[in-house]
Structure formats: C-alpha cells, structure tokens
Length: 133
Length: 71
Picture 1 (cartoon, rainbow over the protein chains, first blue to last red):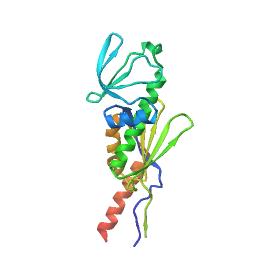
Picture 2 (spheres, rainbow over the protein chains, first blue to last red):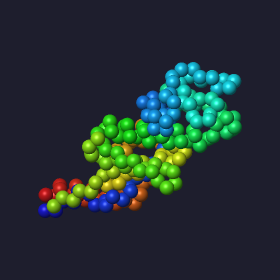
Picture 3 (cartoon, one colour):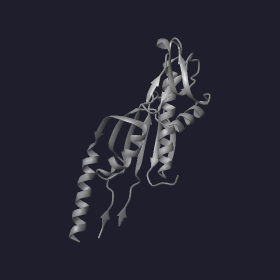
Picture 4 (cartoon, helix red, strand yellow):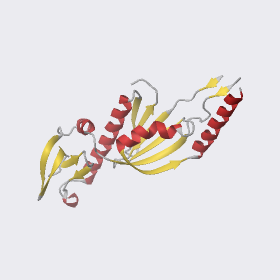
C-alpha cells in the first residue's frame, strides 16, 4: 500500500500581507542592535512642541527620537516632512524590527531560521517548520 | 512508501517594513494554522491569498483520508 503524505512540491499555497506593528520591546532592542543604533530608552520624550511616552529610538540624523508605544503599536515622531529626518531611516528600522521579531518568535517555537538579503533591499527569512533552533 | 516534502514559511520583509508570509509544502488548511503565529507576531493582516495549490492539496488530503478509511 502506498501512502503519499504530501503532493505539494514546495509550491506556495497561502500568501498573507502584514502591516508591521511594533509591540515587542525585545525586538526593538534587537533591531537597534542590528542597525547599530543607540540602545532604546523607555520614558517620556520630547518631539518639538509635543511629547510621547514609550521606547525612544534614535535614528541617524533625526532631530527627535521615534517613540514606540508597544501597548497601542502607535509610533510617535516629528521629522517635519523629512526636513528633520529621512523617512528611509524609519523604514529601515521597521524592516529591522520585523526581521528580528519574526526570528525571535520562530526560534521560540523551536524552528530554524535562515536570513537572506534580496537585490531589491527586502530581506527574506525561511523558517523550516519542525527544524532545530 | 511515504513521500515527505519539507514544510517552510517564507517571510519577505520589504524595505519599508511591510511583510509578506508565504507557506510551502503544507497540505490544505494546515498552512493557515502553521503560519498564524508569525502573522500575529508581526502585526495586522491586510490581505490573504489562497493559491490553486491550497485547493489542490486540500482535495488531496481528503482523498488520502478516504483511502485510509477504506483500508
């Protein structure tokens, strides 16, 4: 008797798009470490005329920090439409956070993770389900 | 004979931080269950697409169950 467990030869069966939300202080620290940014500091931070409370991240050449409230996933910042800090630096932090967050939860589940940069600037993570951490 | 193909979850994180999760090698709805932890960990789902392989493998899974029940 022949039993075929899987006939799907590694083709994609399911695609999900996700808007990244910053909710994990450990991954914030890991992203800062990855991007060689100063260590994030929790507290109340000044943003020109306003202030915000959360994890303050200092981005390169940004006048004010980006403040991440992990309870609401809100990110507070004031870069004056790019004059006080480039949007690309914030995007780079969001990418670093998503990569580190995915690696942390995958390894916590006992899966192995391989990271690979792509030519378009994206980063691909391959999680082997059931693999060693 | 048992044929097993590796099961992987690919995550592509764009330069702006948005992520796309793709499952490979899963049978039927198992792909949804297996990738849910990553989706929930990263943030808010903005879209979902099931490919032809999802329905193909779901049908295959049902056929294998029927064969096993007949044994």
